[in-house]
Length: 170
Length: 329
Image (cartoon, rainbow over all chains, first blue to last red; front, side):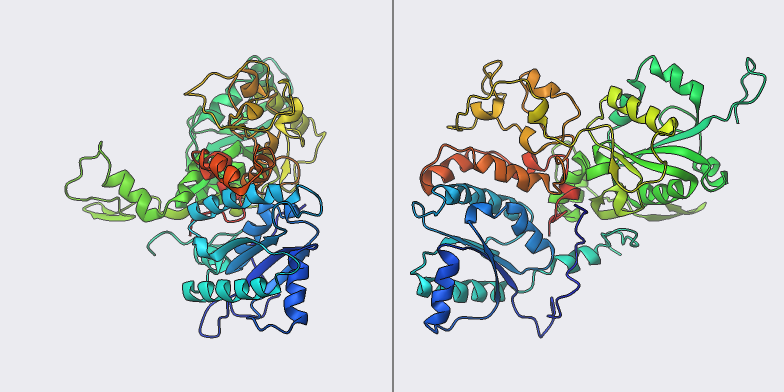
């Protein structure tokens, strides 16, 4: 695997500026949370369209690397949802998630990413309403914090192969 | 360059160079650690630049024709403008540029400074520290006017970068420091023409698998009940340190060292960087450790996680500049 570039070249949405809208990546497990989100849709509940949902088979599959990659490539927030503890289709998949995400949260905090940008919740297949409220709440939190724009931050510091580096204070 | 009086015909010898940037100097020592093989090295190669061991100036390197150096070992990350300038210079003058040691490959220990802002680093270095006496609050300035003209010092960059962030790199030798016998094998392979001098970020002198693969300690399939630290308790010999609760980064670390630390009762610190195709060592370790906890509820998991003293510093100890996020906001 070659190293991914720290940019999001194909996304036309502005990463910052007056037209900015929060960009949130949602990792949802197939069996509960994705079905819950689907339920919110079929029940025609209204919630902000800012979460780009990525379906995974189990929340235990969500490597913390996926979350840091999302931030590094320009996400303003990340949402991770899985089955409630005890409801996992694979018995203990979400037991791994329940330990990984709080640990990851501490790392994100050290990297200067506000804790409100990262949310980890259990959403069952019946909890469409919980999901819609969750998305509305998270979007509002991220909107208040403003753009994160990690690729822009790295570009401004001149980080990247062959780029001219800007010294601090120039 | 060199003439050997014992040889009638001049031998085409390799030209090697070594440079240190943001690093501790241990990499220079590790090259000397090849021991008697140094005599073999001198038979096949001439040193044309090595600030730690030989008296060459930057000017000498500038006067070499492009591509003059065959093997150039660059250890250390890029912290300031001097290191970047020399990296670009050596890239131009070298056929093969090799990132030597963990600082050049993944940022290493100096890259832990990426967890702080430049303001914070300057504050700790020049103002707010018990050992500092600086009532005037003086900070080094990039340019200082003097009667002899402007004096310049290297400019400080906002974060530590890897060598390959600045110039294309042919080979990477990970490790802090790289193990000398592996290094010697790599040098022989490069010098003997068994591998091409030009390549792109190929890791050599190491294996793809994790340190656990080389580790001799016994796995008992026990889950972690509490986290311990080496300065507060003594591990049971022969038993996997991670299972005993010592934060061993072996599962997320590339092998090649021979699992020396766990064999001596010290948890792996992760100095060979991420194993295999993994890019981000820290999150790989988060993933590994979280699936080993003896926790059935969220509260139990949280309680165990709170016992980990410094997850970022421990899991990214040698690879912060290679992580996805690279530095603090």
